[in-house]
Image (cartoon, rainbow over the protein chains, first blue to last red):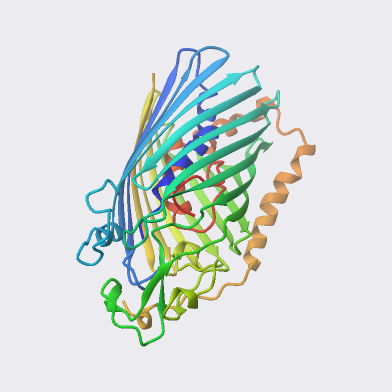
Length: 394
Length: 88
């Protein structure tokens, strides 16, 4: 399965709508910040996930986020990102001997690019509002995004509150698993509301609490996803793993989806330049997926304010969507349920993530970090993530 | 690979009992608005590098990429709730 690169880009847009502004708030007039990162991500298909496809994937991804304090009243920002993806699905779709109708071979199906412009108006010391506009796309879709938020900080800076709204309008080019594209384009609209609250609890403890609600409508399938129908009498299918006895049918999902997530982080200073954080998230949607995660983190400064270490562990578990199954019986798409998917993302699994990061800062002028995370999933779709980040003030 | 080679996934119950571990975390934050928090002269530890919540926005992006794009749940990493792509 090709990873959903588009989501990544737009999530950056949405994220920087808030977290980027948090960086801006520290900038003096005429001062700017630049954050860059190079990520290397590999997903290994050790026989897990969808049993009929090799879902291994490698992504190389540079990202850049820049902010500049134009005046006392205004800040500006820009985000640029780019992905290069090599995946088993791209290779599969590029195999014209298997799929003569495929159109993906030779196309730029393994590249994603996105850009966002942001602005923030500082009303006074504690209040501000911001807005953003973004565009992103790859070979099979384009997406336009917008967003805005209002932030308020208490005078004593012990609490702050942010309310935000973001929207995404996507045009999806429907290219099926076998490369056919006779269905033209379709649209998808997503509207997300965010509430975020920061609270200093005592001199050594503070935390954040957030809530998001997202409502999506339109074409919500991943167009290149297929399910495989089996009844034991189908002929060997060379397009499936091990020439399995099955025939493909399109993934079908409802045209509406509501998603809610409640999340928080609580961090306490333990002394000796060490702190401990407990993060958690609880998620529900109306496709039947319920998920939660717990994420303890340990932060320690190895050398004053210059060299820092972060260790983390994350446990995540989710229940499957109502429409997900590992196997479907039948010989014809009419045999399958109206809504159906074999996408492991919508299936049942849990995962354990362990990671470490080393970060270096040079008197606040510039810094860099290296990190590694290993994600072990119960469905054997294990991941490794390596990143290198560099930032500076200017 | 053939279905017979698949490793079975464990059956999960939801909501799992361990999710209750979230309750103290959330309740502790819900309970604090009544208190004003520390005075400014008590907050020097909150300003330490190991206590800063501001994440590198590019790192948040990468984290979302890995987790949102490969899990069914979105929201809670950074402030985005997901949406807006050529996928579900």
